[in-house]
Length: 168
Image (cartoon, rainbow, N blue to C red; front, side, top):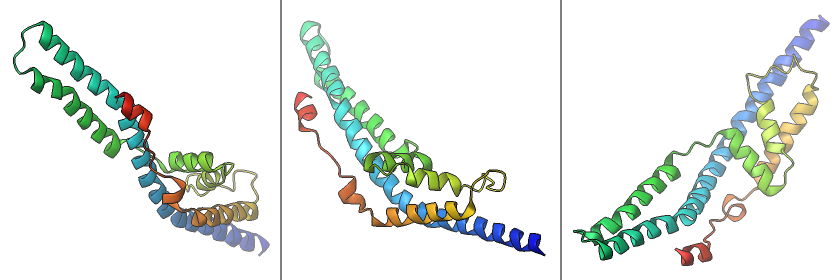
């Protein structure tokens, strides 16, 4: 009888953990979009000078050696840079754990969100580990309340580094 009650308690805890994961996922999706945009803009600003330098070298080579369509050739590195930047911006993978670790690190949350995400992973069986289920539930509730308070646009602003753009 007591074992049956304990088994029901464990099943309730596992259900609550997966419920927390479902509630945490939409917030992580919003953070993922914002981090992708911000990191993509950072990539654009860090690499723009390379495309400009390659274009300038092509124009210089056109002055030294007779090349036809030097201006058009000078635009090729910018086109390649734009295509590469678009691929990085759209297709760079951001897992839930990577997003959670980024949010934790930037906001100084001492790995609240990432730890909660790991503990709500259905592949981890809490019965095999020596973790108190009530403590795990409190941790998940704390992470969820913390995530709900974060304003994504204000917390993760898109930064334009004028110095890097001026160098390019």
